[in-house]
Length: 89
Length: 358
Image (cartoon, rainbow over all chains, first blue to last red; front, side):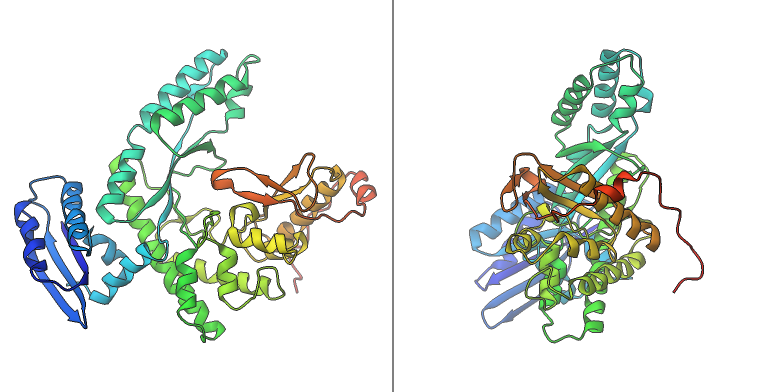
């Protein structure tokens, strides 16, 4: 089971570090990362394996949302299924 | 890896364009709660609903977190309560109504109501997403517009299918159907009328409204049918006046009339819905409204209905407030002339020809 973490907002130092830090803490294995900075807008997509996470999914989601608030970024974590079902036939 | 623009599109639809799952509905049959004594019926009904739907709200919330998509209402649909009442020996229906209220409070659902068909899971989506999609292409031709709506309906329905199958699995009940309906709510940004206006009508109810609605309804079905293996419900655009901010405005401005709404029901899945009429409207006029609507249904082989609310003591131009999801309805003008003689004749209109059509 995989989830997609999206981070969007103003670029600052250490975003990737902090997000992946939470993943490591909750034992979510990062499989793939795509990141780009367009002008000042930072956008990162991270595919993580959540089969072995050490907490409930909701806890991971809350931790990331809290980090987003702290850094002034919009961070979401959603099951991969929702994107697959919406965009693939 | 998923395409990043696809990911962004989904997030934008949820964050900015009110994409949501309108309802998950659990159908519960109460036929086995029948008894002669009303108190026994109430005990059985309460026990069955609270047992079956115990995890409904929690399941909905879990899915909301996992997929990051809001589920607005968790509902329970039950066997029509009148059937249970008729099986008792003169039991007080109010007792049963109170029991249903208590069961709804215990389970924490937003709505409990009777069903006429077996619906295990129903879904519909907010109209905001469709309007946002249309507004991105102000210069699209009508056929391009149809394609845009189709694509959007496909995506929305896929989401409904995903959430529905997941919820059924978690609740241990068979998956029912995905309802392809665009169901408005009184919230701004959630209006079917605004979709029609987004297509280029200055106000819903203007000439062209019927054509725009026909286009919308058909495109929603075409997109949705491919996206789900089990489509059901009324499937199409709902046009309940009091539940749709755009319809309310259009009715208040006098542009949207009952006559125009009647024409609109000829091309979409529903009938005259949530229309408040003056309290002194004669019964024969209401009968005539129903007869017109039934004629549209019979001749066009489609489902239709009439839900008009005579607001006792209120006149044209005043408002009736239902609160919550049912919204606020302006009292709409009804023709003051008479259909009395026609209705008083009694009898029935013979079934229409189904061949030699043109």
